[in-house]
Length: 183
Image (cartoon, rainbow, N blue to C red):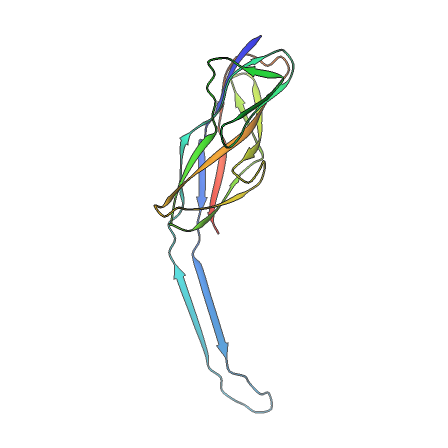
């Protein structure tokens, strides 16, 4: 049996923000048969939004894995619950979901999504694929969260690690990119 340790941490978190603009326009009715002057009113409200900031609280950790030589998977839910197929955890293994904190304007909805559907973890020589990222809306789905009254919200992240047949032992690490955009 082989022992593997795998975790994935964020190395890049991106955010974008925009200004909400509300425009209303009213124009008097113009009759084409006569020349009339018209006046209109325009109004715009520009609301300043704090760009949502993201920071990693805990990296996504798949734990210490024992392989039996064949392929397998380790899925960590957003609650940190593992589901293993074709592999097992060592008795002392620690595994947990990733946790990202979003800091932004209280009460504002934020769309969160993965930049890519899968990322690699590596031991420096070989890789394993991590996919099926879950940000709270189900695997591979973007999700909307609302910043809490204190200006923060934690987002739990789950994913699936795909262990290859005969996977080389070692400590595997990698990174993923998460986007957060105000609605």
